[in-house]
Length: 243
Image (cartoon, rainbow, N blue to C red; front, top):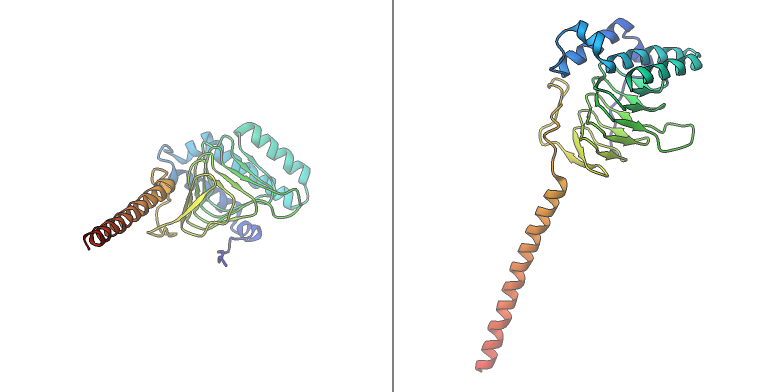
């Protein structure tokens, strides 16, 4: 059975204090976007940051019983930024939503610390039951543009989800996922918390091409065996004819 790392609970995250959360959100932009030059620029022009901050306010209100007000703030945020985050969703420190347009994070989603999302990402549900039905994303996960993570599944820490992948099953830590449905490839060199953020979307394994290559090699080996067997049979037939 897959071992899941422990994500911080909303209460544990809140104990860090709002100023610490806001600072980590700004630092995430400066660390993971080469186009960001100053903190003032990050605060003024990054819609992903605005969406995260508005969500933190809405989430606080939701947890303190002001659910309608929280939903209204969430809706205003969606109109202003193009990013929809349900106020009940739990988000850790240092979330960076790059570009952001079309990002959807559902009600029961849990997002760990230092996660990076690109535009068009969906953390969606697959059930009508009022239960945990959205993904849990571990720390330091990068999810590429257009990727869909669906259902109550777990994305292990330090994993990378390729652009436009559709993930419907649990992903172990330190994995790369590509394709529809998502195919999991384990990293040869594990990514750790002390490493630089993994934003290398160009390093996506060609899972289908690798499988075709492996099948071609097996077919070639079988053809060689069949050719040797056929040659042996022909030699035996000639020997019998000579007798």
